[in-house]
Structures are given as C-alpha cells and as structure tokens.
Image (cartoon, rainbow, N blue to C red):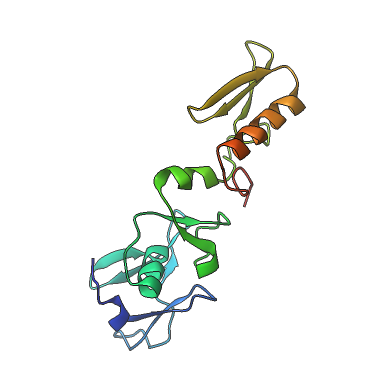
Length: 157
C-alpha cells in the first residue's frame, strides 16, 4: 500500500469526502477522489491501485492502515469519521444490517415449518425454539444484549 497518500489526497472527517490535493491530469485539485463501488462502498484509484475509501480515510486521519473498519450506521458509502470504527471481524459481524432474505423482520428469528414455531439463532452461541413469535423476538434481543451486539444490528438501512 502507498503510505504517501497524504501527498495526493485530503480527508474531511466531517463530510467523509476524500479530495485531490493537486491536479491529476484532467481532474482538478479539490475534486472528489472516490466514487461509489458496485458493493455500495466508495473507492478510489491512485497510481493504478484501487483503495476502499473508508480504509483510505482511516489512514489519512490516523496515519495507519486498519485491519477492519465498521460503518456504524450500516451505510457503506458514509465515510464520516463519526461513522467509522476500527474493529475485528467478529465485532463487525455484530453490526450487520437485516438480510434482504429475512422474512420475519427480526435478525436470527426464522419460521420453522417442520416444527410449526420459530427458530432463534445467534451465530454458534444460541439456538432455541418458541411457538410464540413475540417470545422468539425477546429471546433473540436478550441474547444480542448478552453477547454485546451493536444497537444497530439487524436494522434495515
């Protein structure tokens, strides 16, 4: 990775924008350097190398490359400093948005057609059944608190 990104780019921690410090051919100084990537993240290119903007923002602000970055509010294009946190892979998984395949509206609660109730899961740590949807939701939310999941986990963005 290029450690001299600061020679080319500036980061505004309030807006989350990364801009060019000087002209880059047809691109003028002050222009935004990152654009939306197909996975929802912003990315930029410098000297033929691609960088995810949230990782570059962290480097530009703190001076080192993080192992993992979490977008706290779940919006992958929101690179404001207040929305970024350095984390581990395990901690990052505790702040996932609700899957588009989820049918119950509650992360980790699925209808079990064979038993006629609801299956409640929380990774490998927790698996219970309940015939009552409300009870299943309460079991899941209690487990999320016990295992220190982020408040935003399971929300739609």
